[in-house]
Length: 270
Image 1 (cartoon, one colour):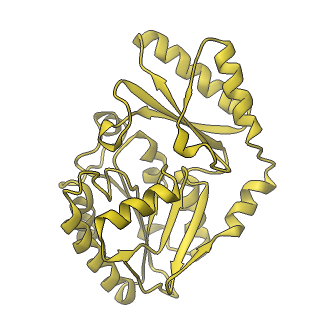
Image 2 (cartoon, rainbow, N blue to C red):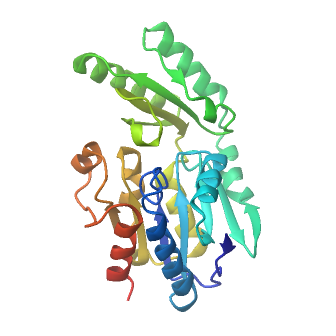
């Protein structure tokens, strides 16, 4: 995979979720991804587009999927672990954004806070199962919650959100997607600092690169993408988005995956 031209003066910011938005895990959209890559690589120069991935996945998981897809280009940036880490890809080099990390550290975040919340929830009979690939993430922690009686789940989710808020954490709770290897009949429960997350990383990039608010675009497919979509002027779910996400957000692209992304970009960026 080749690096894209990294624009000096950025006019457009385009952010995309990864799993089942940009990347289909059955590789059914591999050719569409290459077409999207070629479009962005071309317009990174003439329209000064900055394009990147904002994902709940680890950087290792994202890189593995990019490698097996045999795509043409690396994105300009990848934000992994629910918007708690940020890396740029410039001239073939990976550059970790230490300024963003320092913003999180200055707010006094400690991962033991999440572990304390986990312990408290278990003591109240609300068990959460750790998602092993994320166990070493420095600023976040991801769990599975097994679906039960709707009334019980609603009460448990309210308690989870209450504890998160009391401890200055954000928690995303969304239905698992078996297409990406998650168990059926479970929810993702993802904790991270209240200063981070997908919406926060988009706002940080807008500030950092001084992108006009009217020229910000984002794409997603699930409930944990909603804050990111609300953080930009042009936010869209791809048409294969989960029913839960479509209930939460009204704007849906006509097509699935990266074809939906490319179609909307050609409409928006003139």
